[in-house]
Length: 166
Image (cartoon, rainbow, N blue to C red):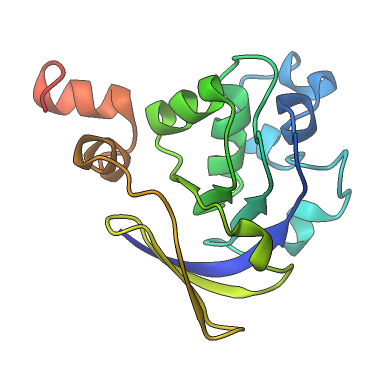
């Protein structure tokens, strides 16, 4: 999977209530509606700045907090192609893969700035910052996780294969 887009930069410890505020996530199950409010507590204009394929880039412990799947689903429905962070909260990491949202652990994510144009190869973990003409390495995802992402998430994988197939 090769992804291209612009970086939208956030800091450390972005919790799931910052990703999608509780004032919205309990009012609707419509993920496209929730997507219009992604990250608005941190950047009220975020959704108006996003172009399909863009990236969220963050620091340490992205996605801490509640285990609800609305956070990665809302990001996915906001047309973000992937989240790149120095580290992820464990439950967010698993929920992201399960819902088909690509995520990459990149210890050098702080070298990416707001607006940088990126190309990402999920299979190899290579991140090319076209703005700075720099290559960064993310932790390579296991082949089964890449496959689950390519198939749109764990539920789609299970439907396609009639169970969990590695």
